[in-house]
Image (cartoon, rainbow, N blue to C red):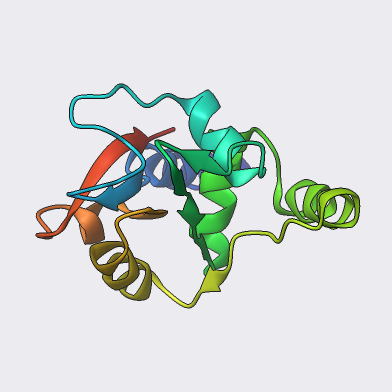
Length: 145
């Protein structure tokens, strides 16, 4: 009987990971920080979110973060290779050393998408399904398991 419960739990867990949704890194369609056709990699996203890249193409990069812990955790793991605690500790140290503030936190993907649509120097992240097909933004990187 224990083996059956273990097997059911394992299958449910596997199903969760197999169907986990990707995180889309999004920018304005007319972005001033990335040029059309430019390849954007994980290192660049990480450097933006850790405050190492502040300006691109003459514009102040306006990164925004997410209040939702699930998407924030997935983004940080995939893009920055760290958990939430390590990210927060990084920013405490970085702010004290440089005076640079962490990316502001927005309540949900809808708020982030609206911000990116209005801000040509903006960069953010949202669940893939919420960002797909939205006019005014484009996904430049898809972070998956």
